[in-house]
Amino acid sequence: MLQTLAARLLVLDVACGGFRVGMFLSRLLNEFWEKEIRPDLLEIGVDCDWDHESIFVINLDKARQVWRETETSLQLGPLYDYHVLMDTVVNQCVRALQKLCPCLTDIALEQIQVRPTVPFEEEWSLPFDIAFETQGTTIAFPDAKTFSPRVAEYAASQLPHKARLLFCFWNRCFRAACHEIFHCVQNLIGQTDSSTSSWVAEHDASFLSASLLAYALRDEAKLLGILLAQWEAEIVHLHALVPREIKLGYTQWRDSFGRVAPWDPSVLSGHGLYVKDRLAFEALTFNEDQFKTQLSLILEDRKGDISKIPPKCLLMEYPVSSDSGENLIFPRL
Ligand SMILES: [Zn+2]
Image 1 (cartoon, protein in one colour):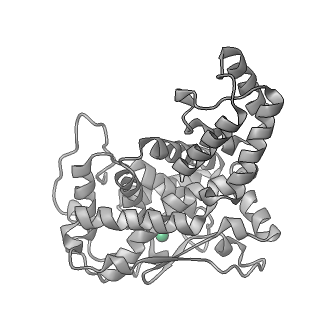
Image 2 (tube, rainbow, N blue to C red):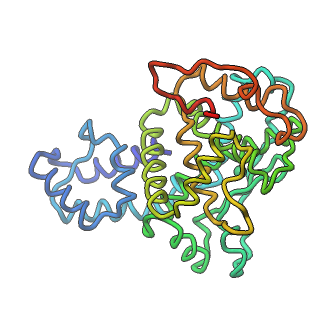
């Protein structure tokens, strides 16, 4: 998709023809970006070969026109085709899991499929209308491009940057695909969870999801960089907003490897995204062997009610890598 965008900019580049972006014009464009270009475009634009100076412009008016055209095409173009995006990410993740998990060799991961959520657009349903969820081996995703004004307004109200609706959901498709796919795997290998609100299953899917994203996109360093930067920014944003008891609950949940729910659902709710995204980000590893260890701890020899079958790491000692500083790969009990 980013290649498509780069190609589109290249076409615009040829259409504009003329002068290479020099220091002065770069400054001018920076100013222009700050004032007029939507931040999501700017962030995507960073990935568009600016290092190689492939964008040519003649003057500010032309630049403005170019960017407006680009923005229009971005809104309508394949960059925001969430169905294609979800399909692509899920397929990439399936291939990664087939390669890394011997325990999944006989499991038909190809069954996993995606479909857009059908929103109810009622007051009560709005949180669900914009949520990702798994039923069996089907991952339902919110198609932000088809949101009605009401759903879009609600979705925007939940985001750190209200103007970045499409870009935020573009990011979330990557993250959520890597989380939901583990719910599909749990279903396929016969894992169930009788704990309150399935917090053990939520823990496990979150614990593995960012590492899966990093592995699945290991050849797409720039794309991964954009996604992780956005991810971190959203966690920091949420961290500033959530109450202290949620942060304490999160720590309990994380350090008990999911066995202690982060909160009592009769008292608190609505912070699932914060705890799940934060755990995923904290457990993220770029090391293939560590990721394999994470996968085997969670998935191997755990069939049945996982709230009653602790992973092996709770029963034996595992070394913590001393040089990487990734001491969150293993639970601290
Ligand atoms: Zn989940």
